[in-house]
Image 1 (tube, rainbow, N blue to C red):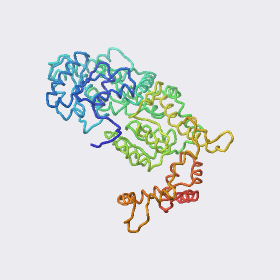
Image 2: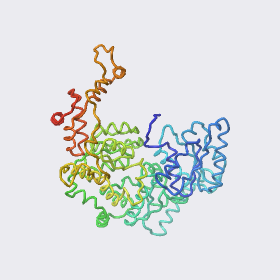
Image 3: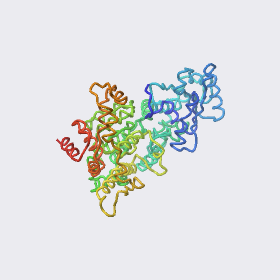
Image 4: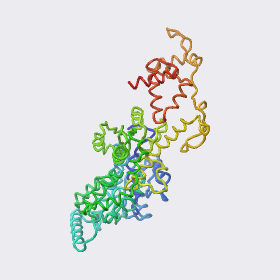
Amino acid sequence: MQLTLWTYEGPPHIGAMRVATSMKDVHYVLHAPQGDTYADLLFTMIERLPKRPPVTYTTFQARDLGGDTAQLFIDAVLQANERFKPNALLVGASCTAELIQDDPGGLALGLNLTTPVIPLDLPAYQRKENWGSAETFYHLVRRLVKRNTNPSATHQTLDSQTSDTQTSIIKSDSQSQKRPSCNILGPTALGFRHRDDVIEISSLIANLGIDVNVIAPMNASVSDIERLPMADFNVVLYPETAQTAAIWLDREFKQPYTKTIPIGHKGTIAFVREVLTLAKLPEDEQLIEQLAKRSRASWYASSVDSTYLTNKRVFIFGDASHAIAAARVAREEMGFQVVGLGTYSREFAREIREAAKLYDLTPIITDDYLEVEDHIEALHPELILGTQMERHIAKRHGIPCTVISAPMHVQDFPARYAPQMGFEGANVLFDTWVHPLMMGLEEHLLGMFREDFEFNDSSAPSHLGGAKKSIESTVQPQFTDSSVNELQGPSDEGGANQSPLNQELSSLPTGEQRVNEMIQHWSREAELELKKIPFFVRGKAKRNTEKFAKEMGVQEITIDTLYDAKAHFKN
């Protein structure tokens, strides 16, 4: 286990909570101590849901550890079942309560409730949030689709129920010729644009002449889950949540599922063709072309204005599905150069590795945001497509960034309609990816025309807001020769008369390097010249110049140093 300030995913019980919160009549009883109830804030403050999650916590305290914590959980289950009257109960433990080993699943099943109980064994110290959501959804589907009406029924009855269900499906199909139907699987609470993606893809599927049987887990009820086998096939929008359940449904009920993620113009067209094939409908090229006209992104991407964006270096990181799709859109539809591709979803490491081969890249598979930042610093991208983590990193490095994946913050749950999937999603992608770069162009133009009478140093790009400080006020204070001498103390080859600061620095392995970093500074003329460089390469030029100066032992960076560095790296 690693202590960290930020994390891409929470523990697996957060994933279970996302599934429970998505559904209508499911309640989650979580064996957890005080302090583990923070998860409510994720839904009410970040996603701004009008209700708190359907979760009951045992909230045992430290003094309870000497008593019967198992009884606390039993009481919580009975009270939750009586108060909320759910049609299904999820039971499990938080990462802290897992250490107590009270076996919440066994305790709840031992109560012999008439309400179906789905025990969740989610190893908090080996797995994380997305895996937890997938495992929860899978167990819900497996338990409820084969659910007994009689609690004392045996497993043989479950098998006969499955056969009866399959038989009823065949009879229903033979009795009336209906339009083909599908289930949409994967959307959950706290998902990145899941609300709008579902609306967009549901509309698209309806326009293809296909009915949507069930959308799950979002807004699904227990009875909806029971009806999943009635569909002809499944649309898996978010494999991180739905793939495990989809594989089981395919094995048990011969329901194939989609493999294409409908992100981007080309991705959506490929998805439409796959859906028509699974629905056993002909590929109507005229219909596909008509639907594709909703996307203006393809025209914009090929317009004259977009030639400015060609070969922009883009770094992509997020959950596997969004990252892989974003890389495809970036290169094939917008003409960007993908210089970095990675994910924190270790369960989908194989898919990321296969995708990275298409761009001759070494995949970045890590859940350490500091490692991701190291890659960004080394690759010098001009645009970052990532998560909330990468947005913070981009701000520190002055690089444009757009969030394409969870984890995200409140601004990534907009009130407006803003899907990432489908043809309208392609429009949203173009706007959100390209506008940060175009706004940067505005900033550069303001810098170019700074001397014009209509412009001055107090003018700022419109997207930044407020008045821009003058160059003089933005220049960082530099060390003067006298201040450096004060830091160095009196010179003494033997080191006996070194100042306390120098003694401390000399004791560190990188002490000499740190002193050099403090001594090195930019002349005013060099800083003015640096500001003439376009913003999207200015950071790289600054870093390269400072690196060159260190290698050459230059303490003050002048205009000559700037151009010497340019020539050095060009060659």
